[in-house]
Image (cartoon, rainbow, N blue to C red):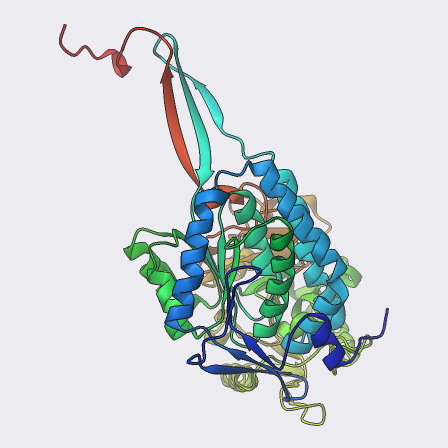
Length: 513
């Protein structure tokens, strides 16, 4: 693995300055409104400022959305395979920028370098997927009951898509939405999360270069600003027929209600409280590795992080002993150090929330098996990953805490395991480790996992591009990044074509003579 370059050199390579405009509508469309409030991006590893953003004002927002709306009028008429060529070039540009952009993700968000680079690889993979998709936006032809008539369905571009992303995947989720939206004929207005604005600026520069090569403006756009102002405006803006939101369930409820009131569409990727069921015959070597990555990776700040282990009583001690031993070997530190396995939490508030949850777990009968300590020697936002054995699925266990806390629950009968697994409000990702075909099949059956993702002998994290990503219940029900998720970015139209000289009515209705 190559050595990361210095912070200044990294920022320079990605065209990030000390002060950066917070709005952009194309290659020549950066907007730095002097009235915009200043946002400082901090390095969660050191707490030091990295660079600043002049956030978008209402006037800047209006300029960006107006440009995207005008772009839609022409972009929708570009043949989908030609739109795919633009996304092919975007994927190639991301390949060239993979290392510095991945390093920036680690620098600004705090995930380890391997995960930062892996996130950029997700962007590349979804571009590859979208290029193929650009030739597969299939409609249907249907037999008509009327002679010399033909019925068909076709899919048309929907309009400008608003994409609101979260800090934990500061670039990949934009790509999941943008690559597919673009080949579907939709420009994108992107509002990134407050803790990771520099990642968005870097991506916008890359997208701008690709857009310039194709003579485009307004297809890839950016507005950085507070949720209470820019975000709220997006939710109520009828020029954005679709809002894709990734974030907490609490905010997601507000997003859904606000957009629904204007009859807009939403893709909601909200909270996860993901569990792994470990049966008595499970391969414990495999399970331990999967649990470790799922619970500790990204410092437990993924929506797909493993938060609950539901293990058969007969092997509970063996598994927990293995996990405690593995946790003690996790190297915590600078995420840009190749030897580090867990970096910091993204903001100081996350540390407070973690230890509040630990105290609640103790009050509800939990026993801390390891961790549960801050690491001020490393920095204010560093913590030890924590395992807590719980006597039951209490209130704290049912709540998603965005931190590296793993709750262990025991079961006797498999039906009990399924009840525990499904007995939380969230329904994103799930997994079972078992050597039993029957148990595996039951887990993915209608009476098994109630999650949008259900895996067998792999963990809850690490979604692969191609399968539709999303969950059920309070996770929101949205799907993006694969399968037929493209349909939500388009509008369906049913056509009936009469090539006869008669005018028969459906259902044999006679009207007049």
